[in-house]
Amino acid sequence: MIDLEIARNELKTQDLTLVIVKTGEVIFKTNDHKIAGFLSAIEKFGQFLEGSSIADRVVGKAIALLCVYAKIKAIYAKVISAKAKKVLEQNQISHEWASIVNEILDLETNQVCPFEMKAMELSDPKITYFELRNLLNSLKNCKHS
Picture (cartoon, rainbow, N blue to C red):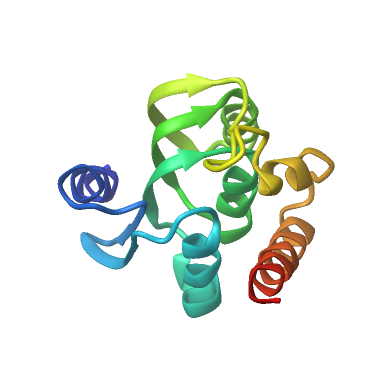
């Protein structure tokens, strides 16, 4: 679990939202908000993420399903949702957290995060990856128009 300790320490000591560690080395870190950082890591590293450990500031069901898709072995969450915890347990992904909540809310509107809304209806990790990537792209396009 050294990878998870390294990831957790990086998350806590730097202004980051996501840290991914594999075989003792930080392979990805970001301070991107929402799910963009993890989707970028999946696009950049693909199957190389298998067996990695991650530390993420906020983990909902959407991130949990992406962890299953990327075959992450362990995760630390500063905040985790009950639904995310259930997904991680069902898929035997080791997980630790600082606090647990019922829902992950959008920072700006205090409503359920749109990625969590999408994840509510999903259970297949591969479909989740494509659906969340499409949602992120559509939200980016909305902000630019």
